[in-house]
Image (cartoon, rainbow, N blue to C red):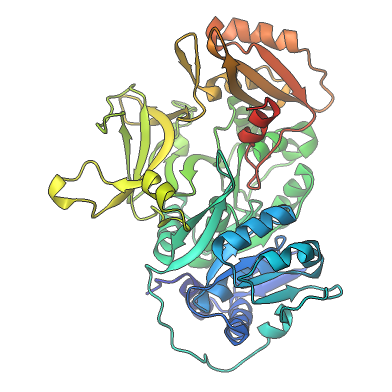
Length: 523
């Protein structure tokens, strides 16, 4: 029975040894080959000094080495810390220092950018490099990943890890302050893989294109579901949306997950998505924010045989809800209902379950609730609290995750996202969801991206400011946009200001970076 992350690889390698497991560029590895290289890397990491529970960073672009590192660290009983390849050296240094990183797997080029900061990472004991390039001169021992992968022979230690052990730390962008490390156990990751595979119907025939970084929970889950079910995962480094479209066709991709910014790009005419049928693409999934209805309409027209799953999740509890594709026409703005083996509660400020239509906080109960934040007990206590619906006699025997997201349900129990507790706008006494305003802006058909925040106002409390990015080649008239908003929304919901940007700031996982927009306003 699989109960640790690397057990999934072992099982698939045993039953599907010659099946194509991993594709990147011209590299195509079977499960047997992935397992062989992983076993060698595991041995090498142990020899380098890794002991059970050590944190090892993976600072790499999408690559075969990145996948081998995740499973190798797991098999060596370490804790893998995937770091988004687009982060700057100071951000990488923060993560390394925050989690007490003992080893770092990266490239010579990336290591060279960290040279000046390495003395500050006092916990770091060794580095593993992959790829070519001159090795920077550092005092730490340096190992070559490709050489470690070729080590052979039986394991040199006895496996002791259990499913409750810490397996990974994912750093969230957060709404304020520096990123926090969310701790995931083997059991959390395994449960997420099994649950998503169930409602998406993932089998060994799946070919999944990984466009989301593995430092993002949804991106990591794509890798885990593929390997758990014996499917194939295809990695891609892309700049333009048309490159994604080309890969969908070339590799006969059956599954694709994305965030709203990706779908907005793919919905643009220059992506070429609408020019050729995607007969192999069985499903797409959206997470990381509401998909604009105008974008959803374009995607459904371009992909008439592809199932669209709208999902909601948070790193602290992974995935919470999904909307079955057959419900899209009836409730296209819904987040759906709870994923399998999970209960979603909507609670008011007094901890009581909300009635349909009543706004409350989404609270997640189930096997994917994380272990909390690394070395942040106060933040953990705020997010993970005793289950309020259990009898008092049971005390705090079960923790549930308070998401901070405000939602409501309809009479049939389907959920609708309204906004963050800390981003809801209050103007003239009205509570306003930024998502609702953004949706109207998208409906103009003139925008590639839109984001709304509340800014202080002495009289109204807050007024609305919208940041927008125009579609390619479409000139924007801010006054005209305001006029359209005035025709679609009550006056209190119409933005007072619109600022046109050339590019929307994004977090490392591809979401709109709302804190960056607030900083532009000196907030």
